[in-house]
Amino acid sequence: MMSELDKIRAMAMRHAGRQSPQLPRLFAYTLDHTTEIDPLIYDPAASLVIQGTQRMFIGDKMFEYGPGQSMIVAAEIAALGQICEASEDQPFLAIGLFLDPALLSDLVLEMAAIPELPIESGYGVSTASASLLGAWGRLLELLDRPTEIPVMAQSLEHELMFRLLMGPHGGLLRQIAGSDSRLMHIRKAMAWIRDHYTERLNFKAVAALAGMSVSVFYDRFKAVAAVSPLQYQKYIRLHEARRRMIANQVSAAEVGFAVGYESASQFSREYKRLFGAPPGQDTERAKAGLGGINRPRSLAARPDVA
Image (cartoon, rainbow, N blue to C red):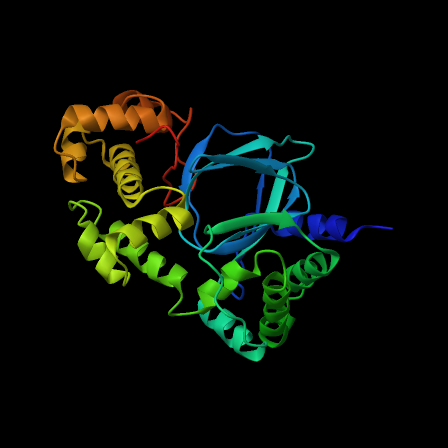
């Protein structure tokens, strides 16, 4: 008898790489080859690996997750990712759903009152239960029956979120659901840093935005993001510099100053430490298709960058 994961695999392969306009937050992703380590930022999402293995570096932590394992990301986490098990015969395959805070808030209100948990990291990985796999399968099945989406999508997404809320990382989702939660205050600070990445980072101002003292803000930011606020800003600057050089063919010195660096040598040195090659060499390889960004909004949390 076909297992639940096998059923999900068959459906995901039919829809991988195609987005349904009726279910725009649901996605299926496949790749038939392994990859180099690739920098990225996760948007808040829940995902399930169906086939193959992915390796992640977040801050100073490294972990792998594979078939039947679920990942929740509750904040815009900087990471390094690598597909380390994939082939043409057995491609890497995963499905995911970008999270809707409003839907989560409605669902949490329907559940028994749960006190806010201590601040935790902004991500978690665990083995999916049979009930969670079933919920994923029923939601994905709607892609084969698009006429049912207007009637069934909301209830099936509620079921999936309920199963995740009741799972080992439900606390992360409850933090997203709370507009006044500590996680949401850190996410507000993250968004401010991303919007003002060219400016000198004012710790007091950003901490005040999060409603915290500087020391508390620093500790909680690092607990959620696995990097310091200054590192987070640095990675955004470097990624934006890389994107501009690939797209616009501007010089390293010019773009380094444009994204907020005051020293061309510091920019080049930190760029090489993050991306593994000097700016000119790295971007030429990316343009030639020998490496580089293959996902939007990517940046990194390589632990050797100060």
